[in-house]
Length: 223
Image (cartoon, rainbow, N blue to C red; front, side, top):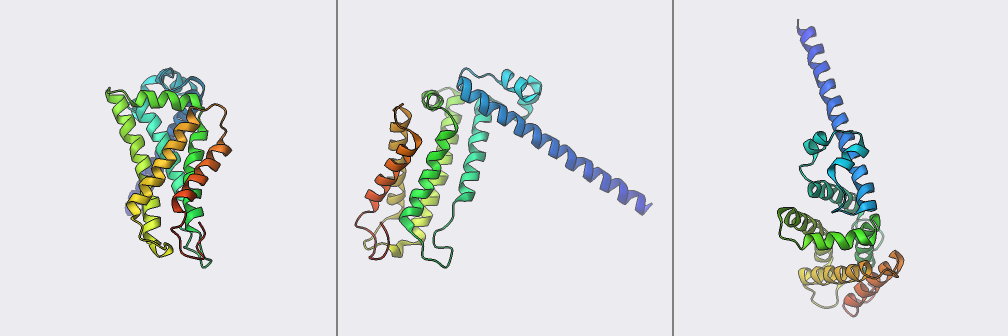
């Protein structure tokens, strides 16, 4: 009897695992379809029904995974941002001497690459949607600000952890906010300037971050 119960339990666990795998794959399919359709049609024009059709699921099914179009977009952004954060490393984590300024630049350029995933027209439309006061706009705004805040915290912690690199007293929170503000300003300029490509955007961002650190680093610490 004990052996019978063991095999029944094991079988149930295997089936549960397979169901979870299938659910996750369905979720990924929906997200991939959404990314393609958002890129082609923009956020407002895209519908949950056509995303569901492209993903090979019913319209009702898609709402079991994502309660709204905004929630779907936020989930995509969150997973992309998580992947980006996982790639970030502390420049001083290895035995070789690190370069704080270049590491901050690398992190913010990684953040900049995030905007390359969709056309500029998509971002311009999304920024417009976010200014609305309907529930969907408010949730989008809060969710995207949350992603930005996580990136700012990473920069803040990096500066705070390596404050001995500075020749002058630097407030890590103010420094992180200044870097974030420069990044947002450069991002908006990039979004509304059709002639600026992603490389020019990254170069401008790097130049402005170096300017913020200029004259503040100890001798031997690169600016």
